[in-house]
Image (cartoon, rainbow, N blue to C red; front, side):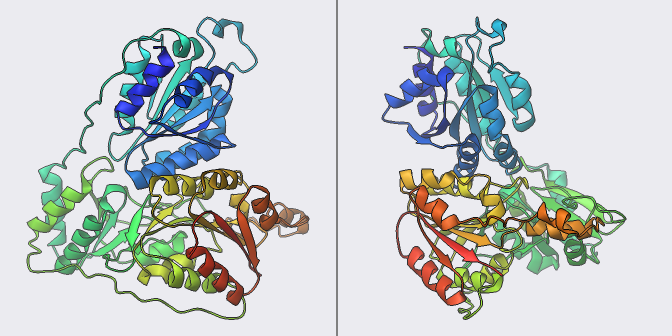
Length: 515
């Protein structure tokens, strides 16, 4: 049994079932091992950023890690933007990166690079295998590292000879650590803050945003009067009918500071104090009012749900029941196609247990608030801010949950970063509906141009944020990669196309032409 075969069997023994792959010559023995296995699903992506984004989506929905397979340092570099997003989402991802054989490194061949240096900024754990016999133990440690709650990026670099040389027996399933409990003092302090009469906000993210976590937060709010918020960008949020509601912080500083106005105390659960996405001239970076007392109930890696349970007990929420969202569909718009009409159609037609992957940017901003009373669903957002996350993350979510409809809301500019994802969706026949919000510009950048005080609004400046001349044609691009596609120019056309897509299986794209 060579190193690649023992490594693969170790992954399978430890519950890794899917590999999103874009390999090269140095990975051929790993490719061969996967090809001989009936237990590891291999999914080819045409760009490494699609692999890493798909692994992120898979981890968010499956609650465990997939692996990726990349070709040397350049392949890893291509994956880095979506590994950045996955890192910010605390997703469990295992990267397998091929490298030159140990004895070949000294020749500095054209593809030679500092793979460790490239891996470190987007990984929590990095190791280079030293030989084939140590490879199975290395990959077992990578699985354990990736699954440190709520999730980490583990990158194992595999020189080619470590894959083809004779190895040892695979490693059996390794125990995974549970998230640690929070200290008693953290609960006591939070309970005292909730009882001292000061206006208090509870801000939640990551492991706090489970269905049970949301219910507990609502009970705490009812008992104490504290206001409950989640971060602007969250890995996964259960919402819709039957779920306890939570308010989401606004993206722009003006929105968030208004939401938090008057707060004297901020309790953080699974997150940190909120700050502006960017700095702006003459504006504060922190959202909470000056002088606000900050307290962390649970760090992102601590058991936030249990911390909320203990806090609810400490303030005695007995006798209260969670307030659950009623089904409140908004009805359809007719006539002009607008962000609001799209949001209304999404809320009306979203099926039970849909998964929404949101990279809608400015044009998709109406979809989230309008769909609060839709059927129960999960909402996934762009945690790291690096665009091009939506399409590949939809791949991973669909692979993790094949019995659930995935709805990907995507701006046209961001979609072009990882448009090759459509080919993988077609090849794997994934049940994904993509809505391209086509306004033919990087609209968020036009907004930010004014917000940062850069006021040169001439044609040369605006051309750097414009996606016309020539116009992108997502219908043709989609059909060229095997995904059925249509274009909607009115609300009525969009309503009908989305209705069809929600009642069909398999990938489909709707290009929504916005004014």
